[in-house]
Length: 168
Image 1 (tube, rainbow, N blue to C red):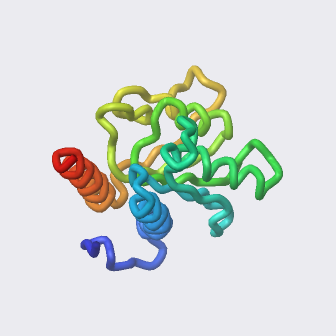
Image 2: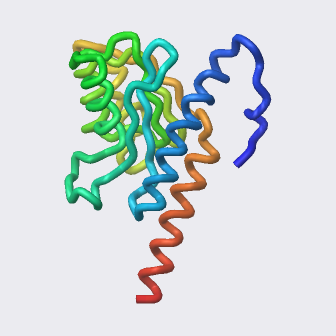
């Protein structure tokens, strides 16, 4: 899934965002292969991935098993802290209200996501939980990184799902 973003410019912050988002996208591909909604996430700290995850809600029959929640839990365990200061979360789809709340509670300073979610997005689309100054923490949010790829895998997954339902 190459795009014009494949050309790297030294020192470009956007290129770093794209680099980590590609890792999150690989997690989304793993979710897809398991029949899960293809959403992936990684938490980065000091230039290293310290937590990663993909949706496992169907596999675990757990409504909280979102990619972000799994990545945040792994990162917290890695750091031995519930506070993920100096970390960035990269996720292929805009976080929902549950995941946005977890981002605030974990005090993640940077959130980067690919596709906006018009039905459940809580980091700028329907709600702005991660940027709400009334809460105890605010994240800097970067939207639309690898958005075409993030949208395409979701569209492909749901088109395939609809086709399977028609055959059944």
